[in-house]
Length: 111
Length: 114
Image 1 (cartoon, rainbow over the protein chains, first blue to last red):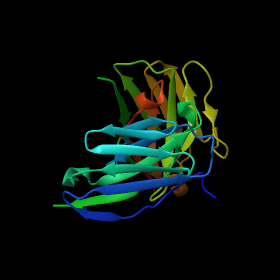
Image 2 (image 1 turned 180 degrees about the vertical axis):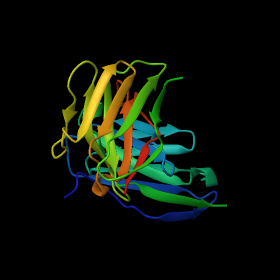
Image 3 (image 1 turned 135 degrees about the vertical axis):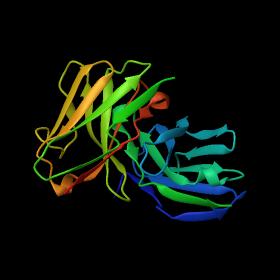
Image 4 (image 1 turned 60 degrees about the horizontal axis):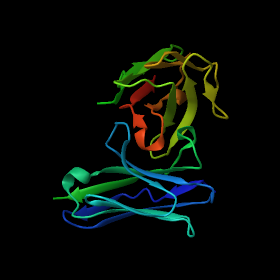
């Protein structure tokens, strides 16, 4: 079983839709949860960072962590064509040198 | 602002040759840098942790004699793929930072070995 599971998609939505991206994990010791956006053939860009459980909101993006279910989500409101990218979840027990990434979900927002 | 710069962005080489990839931290110093490899439709996998002034720490299964890492200054780490073979073809990404929320990634290097 992989440490982190993420549906690779692809996921296509119309402009303005609410997008829900999810990851599940198996290691209950994970404490740090991140979402990255990666454009084709570019390095990942940090979108959201959450420590332990709870919600975090930043503009159109909301990250949720449910440690009891070992499940994290990223919601994108009012999606835009510029949101089209691959979204990676990542998590760790502690320390930036021990990040476990999901495979990424490829999102396309259709104008 | 702080940026991680990675070069080259793309390299094509013949089998058996060596390739060097550079990772620089701009506007900040990085005592630690990380090297990842990403195969198509797969996760980023940590290859090694590069430590300034000391030996790199390699993840299990990564050949340290094949993937040479040098972190000679606080702003530069290099990854050299020695005697590259087609199976080494991949997307290599470096990152640097002191904490999770400040971990910055380079733009990646697509290596194609013919």
